[in-house]
Length: 247
Ligand SMILES: C[S@@+](CC[C@H](N)C(=O)[O-])C[C@H]1O[C@@H](n2cnc3c(N)ncnc32)[C@H](O)[C@@H]1O
Ligand SMILES: O=C(O)C(=O)C[C@]1(C(=O)O)C=C[C@@H](O)C=C1
Picture 1 (cartoon, protein in one colour):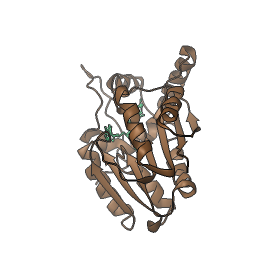
Picture 2: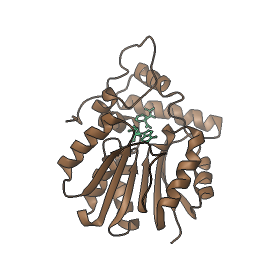
Picture 3: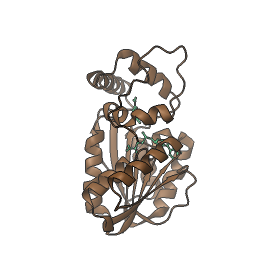
Picture 4: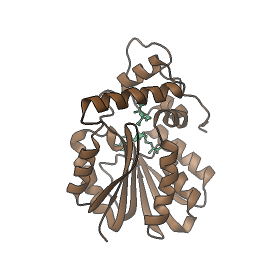
């Protein structure tokens, strides 16, 4: 079983060559600690996803959690809503994530109807859904695939459905962006990461995590057909948006 107290020490020692970041066994083993110390507002976003589901999810509706990692979104929803309120499919490409997520969810919320599927979110045949969550996943897709995925998700959503999209973002203004990135590195330092860890992780994420601007996200969602898009959360260079499909 994955031990949530396992500390992320992946980039603590100097590496001759920093390999590209991937969601392998090593990352899975320390993922809860890594994401909590690396994503400003991660816990608050998860907490609010339950509240958003209470408000916007049709009773008994289906939810997709795309790029579900260890199933944190499903766990957050199960913490607020009873089993009859929703069913959920989590999808993730990483076999190591999928097997840990299944074990964790079976232990934590066996009554809830949550399935974890190993697969690529670009290739899923989506069934109608009332709520779709992309919590820090779109950023890992090649930029040329992003419009297509969002268009697919718009089609899958029932009228009145919502898409929640959380992402690391980049600011179009160079000075603003530099300030946000510097303060983000301060945030990581305050959470116990060393300069070496911060710089090696940055190298590992190059060309793997490619952030868009908030404006690009809004434009993509609007172009796909969403009638309204609201940025409901931002903490430094991390943000979460909710997009509404007309009823
Ligand atoms: C930062 S993690 C997501 C965190 C998670 N949503 C949470 O809230 O804890 C990104 C996840 O997306 C998955 N992923 C990346 N590309 C994917 C794809 N094309 N299809 C499915 N999953 C993908 C990775 O394996 C990884 O587990
Ligand atoms: O550590 C960073 O620099 C990040 O961008 C954080 C981030 C993310 O945003 O997804 C990157 C990889 C890990 O999945 C956890 C968090």
